[in-house]
Length: 327
Figure 1: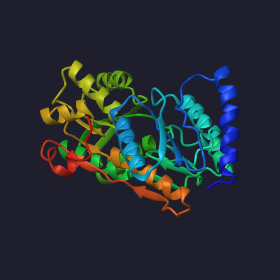
Figure 2: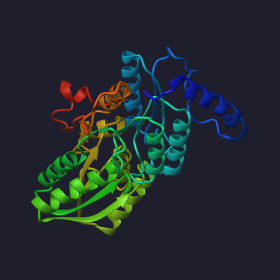
Figure 3: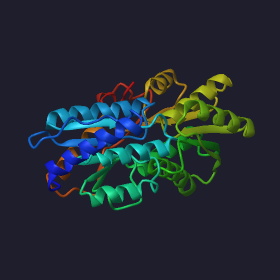
Figure 4: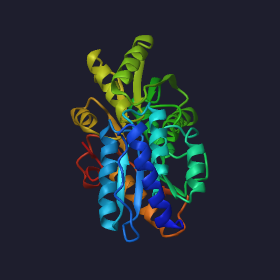
């Protein structure tokens, strides 16, 4: 715990009361007034809000906070392309002097100066979903995305008989998840399936509409395309939309990431071959529990693996799969 907690927090709250009303937009949630007996306050900043994945992360975080007796705020930018907006949220959170911050970085480098400021203020940082290129976070709560994307590559190769052209639509090239899912898929194909050619890797910012445009352009440029890998929920949704609008459902193998209603329906209908599902509720819960451990001064492992599963029509109703899907 930082010292002196009460006086530092009270000063920060009074300063914010004078400044925020005059010049700051009404965006970030404000924690309740703090007293010596108040519960620990954890600020949680996700990569976005648009996708059901992030809403499931929030669900897990709020449930764990209630269980452990913590106060939390949860916010994220409108889209996963809004790096500057996310940095503003992080800056505002630091100004509120929370007991800990959970942060899922849109850009693995851009947030480092602010994280250094938080570290200097004695605020523990827990990275979740996407880490940063720094040792400032005490731990990273996330899926092993390299291993998960390699499984997606194995499934793709199997479904196209280990030969032919495939393409990727990825959410970004700046976050750890974008980089590791792309590289996990591409590297597995290169090392194990020499007759599979990756003809395109495009970045849609996790936006389903933009991802659909990219997928249509890829198909137009590569008429012999056999498979698509969508590296997050928004990318996968865009691929499904493009396949439907071009009449190429069931002609091109589609593999996705995460779940959500559209992917689940597509898998049940056989339009999408399958997907990697993470454990978003578990990610939210574990980032809060890790933050509480950090507040208590406990040593954390460098990485907390929240697990993943491959799911398709054959196992989508298995209890262990149903437990981690969201709609």
